[in-house]
Image 1 (cartoon, rainbow, N blue to C red):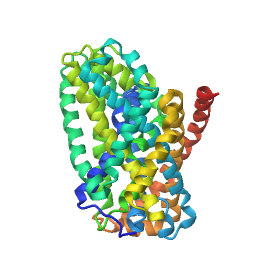
Image 2: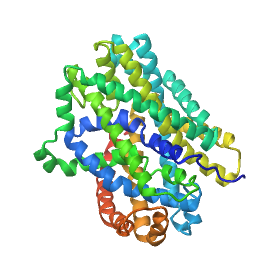
Image 3: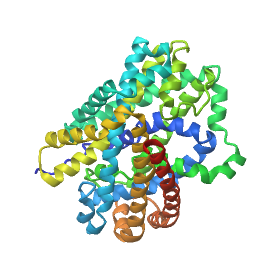
Image 4: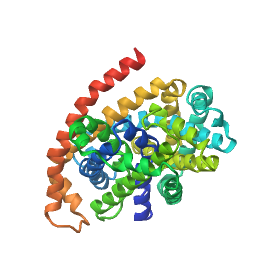
Length: 442
């Protein structure tokens, strides 16, 4: 096995990490979770959780990765805490499950690009979603998507992940800005903005605890936190620069793009009289496809939107697959191409049930997003705040140009608010996930 790969540039690392965070979680999942959870009230809680819960846990991952220079599982023995390697195992399993259904949704996106170009969904948005969301056709596009992901990951860190991030992330941002400007010209834009950006303080006070589980799950999903991505990406760093600064840039970029997605989606909803929250897990596809059929230039706008969705899905999927491939390479010493091929084959097989029935996708998403991601985050907070704290502060302080109290403040944020919030949310979510499984499968 050769020497470990590294990022060619700091910009490449930051863009790759932003690309990991900016995926379907921002553009597909964020609008319908926001709509289901009360609009602007949810947005406020979400933004607070990203800053004060998601970022501190992300920094734990960066610190572990940079110090260990190992994959998500072997990182813990490498820094002297082998009895905590279960965190890495949970992260790997979580990533495997997420990518197994994420690639199915990625396949939907490819079909919607084709549907926008040909006008196939203009005859009925719901009927078209029913055609593309399950069946042999869905499995075929699922395979196509995961093969596109494998094609980039197979080229490695610099030639694959970094080059793709430098091309795709700016493309996503540019195209989203174009659509946001277009959405601002629609007749329903003002109502959409009001729903999305004007929180009702009374609602926020009364429903904050009810909103908390969905907001926490979305924060971890969109930041790629708790799945080991940032440990893996941090392990490819070969210089001591400020992890706090890089983490803040990644968090800010991810949050801005998530908010930007809402500035596109909600004006379109209100322009066409579509009630936010309708459509469930297929809301982005059913509701927006229906809107694009009647908007001026709708087929072109639909094509651009779903291309954005595909690019974002790919950048995030690259990172999840890299977690698994990195572990296989470090553990077995086999070539990257073989590790990538084996990973993709397993992921495709595990995800097949979600390609044939949406109820399995709902269950996979509930287990991975609402339990395993948060469990991984909670364990990382406990480990970083209470077990690894002294070493974590030492590694975190390398390259840090900030007052001396900052590292200690970070540790205490992990120890108390992060642990308390994630424990509460995880407790609430377990009951909900059990109910989801019973409703969907039993």
